[in-house]
Length: 191
Image (tube, rainbow, N blue to C red; front, side, top):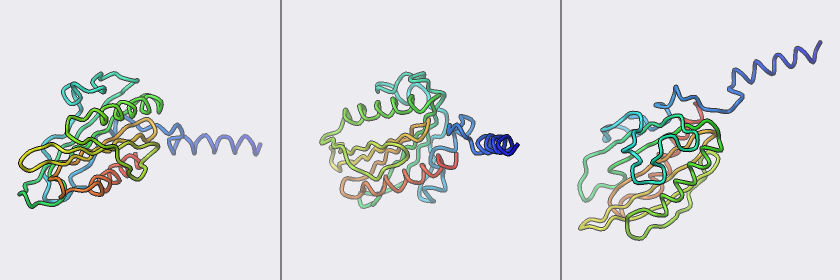
């Protein structure tokens, strides 16, 4: 009798806690950075379901890759001058998959994509681990005022997430991207 009651309580507990560990597609828009995460200097200029154009020309272009169930993207910008420190543009993405193995395969595509970044001096970088696995890179875009990009992607359960941070070279740091990625991971963890 006790075993039966214990089993029922365990099943109810797992159901209430999301025992499968899967994130739900219905909350996809909450798995990206929100305006409050960036503060007042930033303005959101895009927020919505990812479309084919968002990944065109990348290894992640197939909208149905690896059992993908959907994706969301939010873009933010702030005004700045050549003296502005920190990010000028932030792009936050989240993609959900039927399984964690689909998300792991998608993270592999991020790894490939980061290695092929178009800028000069592409480098893999080490950042603190986010979620279940993390990959990150940085590169510069030459110009009168070179731009520095930091890209961090990670897998958490059946989702992948990424942050791209753009700012003036020498005035934006990997720590800026890591701080924002941690905020986004908090949204996923509360999924």
